[in-house]
Image (cartoon, rainbow, N blue to C red; front, side, top):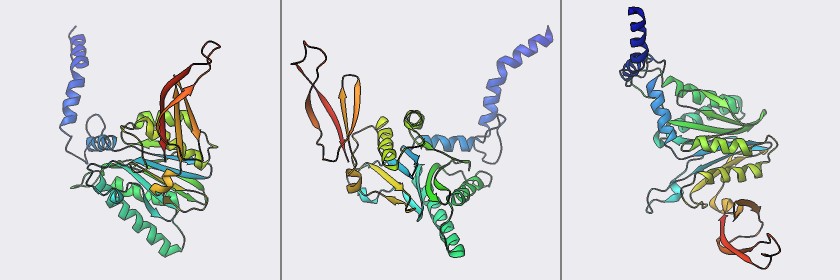
Length: 298
């Protein structure tokens, strides 16, 4: 009975003791906690999850990056806020997390791309610049006197291997993705992408899907000023769309009862209330139903 009593005590009190033991390692970067975790990396991932959402979609003929751009004050110059940047001519990047950490990795990535071009006289392969970025982030998880980078990166590019999309996390781990999301509401965004994505998607449709995905978790009305889109196609030139170009993508969401229809238009659509006539049966044929037309114009 004594052995059984010890087993009961061990079963009941081991989890709290383990949790308490983990807390003793919460400030140690280079030491594993008893649970097998590096807690500072867990905290860095939590910081990423609090960042503004960003996503990437690999299409058949290119890659699109999209993100929400939040202006914290009406006094801030919106043109100075950039989340999507170019690492090299054929590679672009977007982040979720801490802006200062992003600037450090952006500078290191551009330096790597320039060094490669100076040595070999050709643009750096996407996979190589991803590895170098991941190596820098991994080194900051095993060195004394530093902390992990509080960001995750989505890196998009086009080289001889075709369009490519990678995600790099604070631990330094990276994977190739067909579509992925980081930042706030990334779980819901990934679920939405899983339902919408197919491998034959065109770049234009990928842009529309990216905007739809951002809209799912958007806290306010989408405009050309509070989202940012970067694309790279078969020309292998990554570029960030200007607000005027973003306005060229016009989406109209007509909500009728429980049905939602996505309409592409070549003409400008103005948001506002409209009257939609529905013919549900013979009795309601001459009756019109008023509803709100949710129009998003880019």
